[in-house]
Length: 301
Image (cartoon, rainbow, N blue to C red):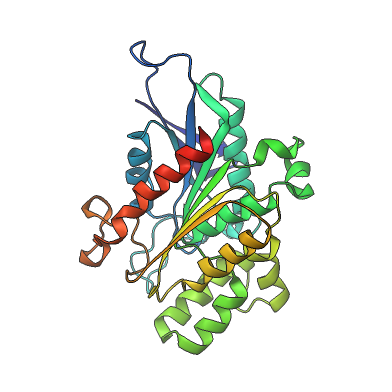
């Protein structure tokens, strides 16, 4: 395996794409290019989680995928360990900049597909939490003019061929209503600072919330989507997955939805390889990866 990190913007060293490229050994099927997965870790747009990055990339690599981890623009330049001592702020975190970061990553993978032995028509996104919001946003906005105008490239180059979403935030209006009604003060505080990262304000308008919610922009051109969530997630509510799946169904977009009965937010692979604490080990939810891998094989091969 070859591991290489690329800085996506010359003037911004925070945004990188780390490639995990499998060796093209002569002992394997050398005439068949591999599919690829671009992973978008979560972190509330405040940072990008290591737990949802390399371990997930390596798990997909074990299934025969070239994998990539995107570190997109987030509000803080390093992972927040103590919210009483916040690190340096990055003003570029406001949307749609993270979406342009992802577009740049997809473009890099597709333009290097021949050199990296990748099938350019078999590129999936896998996002968790805020990274799930980012992946879903690309799934519903890849054809929008502002992306084409930003890169002067045809929109088809930015379309993912499939999308995997883990406990994603997909409806900001729903989230606002639920947070105001159900969340404790700590989670309300997290919502406010995350809103600052995404919108540039702690109090976004209803119109801003609507515009940035992927559930409002699903069309028949949205790629096939796999979604998993837990019913008692009390940070990003499971209704996000349900309402998005309903919109996919209305638009006849192929999808698969799994809502497990119980599990904390941020499970990643749900096993010891990605556990930050004991609650992140959840045997019932571990099966999401094999379910997703089976589903992905059907849509990319």
